[in-house]
Length: 382
Image (cartoon, rainbow, N blue to C red):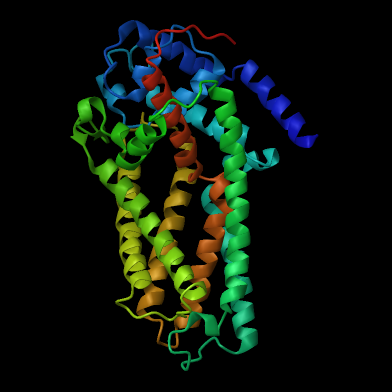
């Protein structure tokens, strides 16, 4: 009943457009008349298939937007023009509403409004303090006779059960949220090949190519592909770390090969490469984020963006340090830090910047379906 009430409330919210949605409706009407940016990205191509834009359309197109900035720098109606067309900023504000509206449980959507940096640090700090307490109680804090074996401090099965529970909870929360989002934005059947098209767009980040695939605009009109490159390093670094954990799990449970693994083993090599990617990528994104043009995006969301980057850096740096010092007296301390950062990150995943990748993937799937179906102009209604 509670979930039903939440969905009813959600439907009412979408039936009564917010100020952010109304602003996007306004600027898209101007864009649809101008169409100078028609070939820039999937967002504008989707726009040309519509004459009017209801709230669901706006939420879909906002998540289809990759905030490359090309349209802002190309637009003759951008500020200081009296029309004040700013697609990147307008879409960013709607994306935040999407995360809040479809968060599950619904009350957790308020976390997107909080200071994400402070909230992430608080969550991780509480977990780290708890882990430190356990290690000190066991007398293993400065034990040098562990031979690099993490599980001599925290039993493997205990860690697997704890992180498994957190991981499953995160998957359920994100899964329900994006399912509700999908039901709101799409009624079309899944066209053959659309999932493959969307997967390709996700993996290549095609829509971070900006106008005519020349790249994003950062601080000025110059095009750059660095945002795409740093996103790739971050994403594939994360996936390599996930692969390392998955391979280690197979080694432990199916082959009976227990950690610690050698520096040349597959789990360690995958984790090392992933960790390096998760250092270079987030540092690059942080640099670009801090120097972007002041009209790009929603500055109110910077704490969420920076909190996400800080979490990834904390995980990757502590993970690489743990590998480097795993046979020293500092191993237990670094292990507590690393596990705390990882646990805090996973707990916040459904209610932080990570969610943008999930909702954007759903929007890319809808776009792929529309393209496959050869959809033509339609009129929406609120």
